[in-house]
Amino acid sequence: MAVAVGAFAGPFAWNAVLRAVDAPQFFVDAPLPVFPVSWQDTGSGVFAFAVLALVLGMGPLRSAPAQRVILLAGLGSIAALVVDVFLY
Image (cartoon, rainbow, N blue to C red; front, side, top):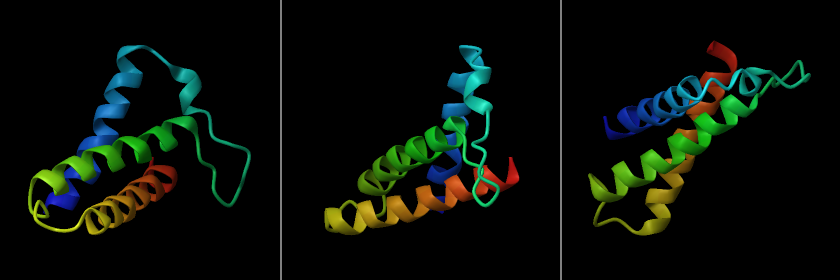
């Protein structure tokens, strides 16, 4: 549950920032037909990683080794990035 919350909250916050500052240039996809990533998508992945690391590290994995927290945050942020690239 914590991974789903973090993977949703990070990109949501990043998109709120982009819309608040009116930054349409971030929504332009790269000319790669296989993986058309944009700066907006990349920011979503970064924000998802940060939020996931905080949520997991301060929540259900607070007693786990940092390596495990970062691994799960990384996997969740990659999933959020891929969903953002191909579904939005």
